[in-house]
Length: 141
Length: 141
Length: 80
Length: 80
Image (cartoon, rainbow over all chains, first blue to last red; front, side, top):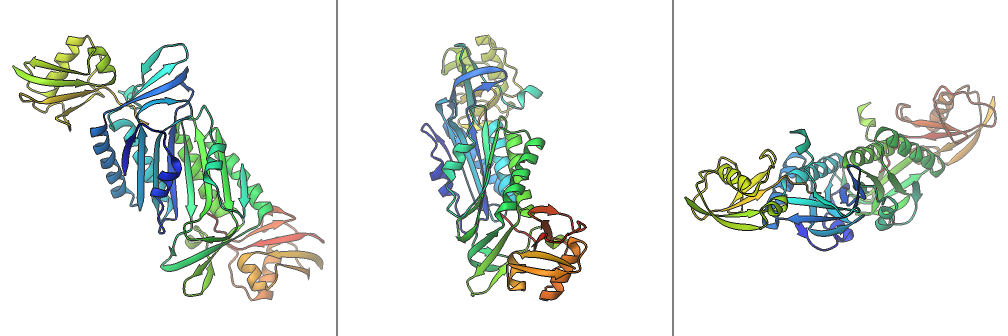
């Protein structure tokens, strides 16, 4: 399951979605809005998402992860809209019989989501300024 | 924080413990009681823990993880006593400014906890039999 | 000349001052659309990490565009 | 001969039929305690992945034991 949501992410609901009697565990990654980035103090954050394609690409990422690291259940939700410090921006959970697959699939999903989905992050700084955040791999071009 | 608990693990409380405004995310691993192991159907599970040393060793593991993969907050709770299928047996959460440290520290903590802490797992099977589960690395000796 | 609807996102939307334009362009490929709209809006973002979709499907920059296509121009992404 | 309190856990407790015994042993090291109690209880667990603590501190099998020590014998662990 992959979804875009403009509402608070409710962790308990998502956790229930990846429950499975055959799972020995779940690996979860939650991305939070942190109070600074590259030395600047962040006040809040805005996610612009082009949902039609983000959802297609998000599902593709999960399917790829399943092929590489067979797991039982996976779920991912990414926020859109305005977020405050400490808010959960993205939740990824993967359950599997053994933890190695759960860890690797979870990491694969979050890594790919960060660079492939049409999602843009605008930081609003305490000094009133704001800026679009460049993607992680762009700095290395 | 490392603790042994004979009560249900309450995920929300633990998640709050690793919250930090400087954290870009948290990596969580939850170990669940699964319905089978090595081909046998498990009914429930019993953890025997020697708490005085498990706590000392658990804290040591977290300190080691922090030295290798600097993180902001970490917390771990391991169950003792009788557990049913689907119950959470162990919860590990690590928050860090960036996800790489969070993933690696979380993995280090659960890997070490499984082989170093004086904790023993007895499986009760549906056929009425029961047996102590051997540690993961023992098979390779 | 082709009639193309071009959609802009995030910083491209801000550069263009619009989320969508219908343009008459002499463009054969998605790359042509990128370059012609970039110069039009005074944007200097290199194409390197930008992406493009045509009619809601991710596409290569070498993909050809035809009359009536909707071309989505994505600046570098940063989810999570 | 030394007077030692030996504590057993998990399968060792079941082999010994007791969680604790006070024994008079001719033992110089933790390994001696392991071997002498193993034969006493008919246990066949190899020492490989077993662990030992003396007076609530993890110890090596080569650690020496003295009169009055509490020796904790841990069979292979499997947390998580």
